[in-house]
Structure formats: structure tokens, C-alpha cells
Image (tube, rainbow, N blue to C red):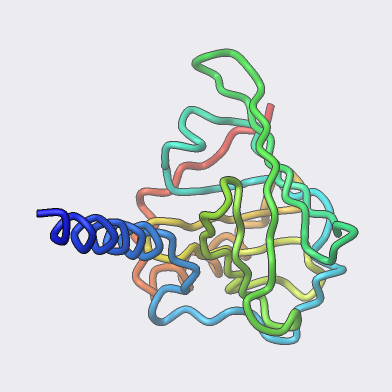
Length: 179
């Protein structure tokens, strides 16, 4: 019996570990491509969340912003803020982002709860770095960001068409209020 326990416990922990790692994917959805020739310096700064899919970490949030800054260790500091209109309180979450490949390819992994990382892929951005379309690791995560609280209709339609072609159900997007 002791031999069984010596084998079963480590094997069980190993399987559990693999399940946790598999749940934390830093991939990119099939059909999506990260922006090449990405300029991370131009991407730094404050962004307003224009639209997103609903998920538990941003549930009931308006006035959501993300501010990206360079950390001394070369990673990107991620400072997300938003107002929970149900609880009537501001929330803030600080994370870290790292490039998966070269920093000229907009494929990153982000963590707010180490050692868990998630994919953060800039799949479309305008030439002036004013509007961005972000894909997570799967079709469950999508964000539209802007340097201002509004986005031109032409950019909105461009991003929605691109997301639909990849397989996103854009009818489920939440359009974030900024007031």
C-alpha cells in the first residue's frame, strides 16, 4: 500500500499540474495573426476599453482603462482600472506582460496572478496607434481599445469584420460606457 501511495500521489499531482497549465494558454485563436513590425514604445500609455466580452474579472465594469508602461526589468506593467457600477466602487488590477517571441511581433502573455499567464495578442492596430483590436488565447476573449473614449465608425466596422472572420460572435460584445 505504501508503494502505491508513493506512486499515486506524485502522478496525481503531475496530472493536476498539467491540467492547470493547459487551462492557462498563451496561444492565439486559429485564424488570428498578431501584428508584425509592432512598435511597443508607441503602444505604451493609456487606452480606453471600448468593447469586450463579458467575463468574471470585468463583470459590471464601466469606465475601464488599461495603462501600459515599461518596467525597469524590461517587461510591461499593466494597470487596469474600472468602476463596478453594482458595488459602486473603483477596482484596480496590476499585472505584467511579456513578449512571447520578438518584441516586434504583438504576441504577449499577461499575468495578474502568477504563475498563471494568458494570451494577449494585438491582431489589428491603426498606423497611428490610436485604436487596437486584441485577441485573447481563445474565442472567449476580445477587446477593442482606443486612446479616446470613442472610436470612429470606420475603425469599429473594420475591427468587427476582422473578428467575425476569425470566428468571434461580435453580437456578444459589451460596449463599455465612459462617463
